[in-house]
Image 1 (cartoon, rainbow, N blue to C red):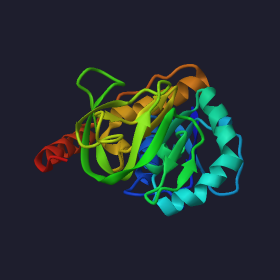
Image 2: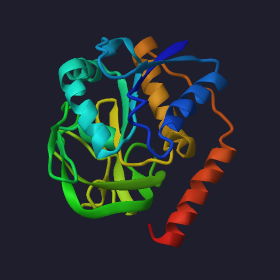
Image 3: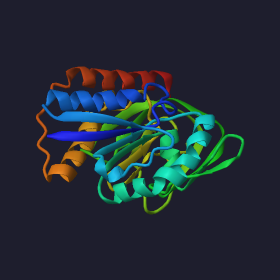
Image 4: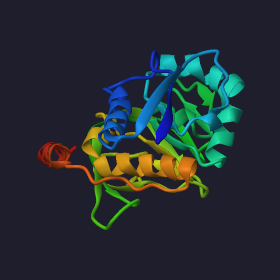
Length: 246
């Protein structure tokens, strides 16, 4: 088996070790004998994103988001939307999450158009939401949690066509008001969780791999892995969040 991974704008959108999400997916595939190829796509390129199995985009500062907003609109947005409707798996972090929504506004109030994968809009907030986050996941077994680190000034609000990925236990989440974190539409996931996210949340990483394999091959039978170290990191992140209150 082989998966094709697209890494969008790694030269511009890679805060807080977001590239580690790509490395985690590749390693978890390697341990299972699944080949994983990564293609870097940046400014000016216009591929057919339906050819990929997983699309990943990390976070960036307002200046980087301004740089890529027009490129997403004119070169890539329509193709990405078609890929999502076709079942391609997507993970978009922070600024990527915002630009995959309907619109987002920078700290100085400039509104940037999104590509509309998520029914979500982002507005500038007063102050920043910064710190460790623990989220009760809506995607797996009861009591399953996601951990990560957030640092964003934007406040994201979901519309009816996008589901949150979880309920915030510690931290700010989408907007610091409704106790919701992230957004999900079909196999596309957006979240504010940096850290990087997937190495400390192996169940979520496997969810993405399973979805990609099912679309490509019609089935996904993942060999169980020894995630002892990953679970230790996950528990340590929860402990730190409780100690700091963020």
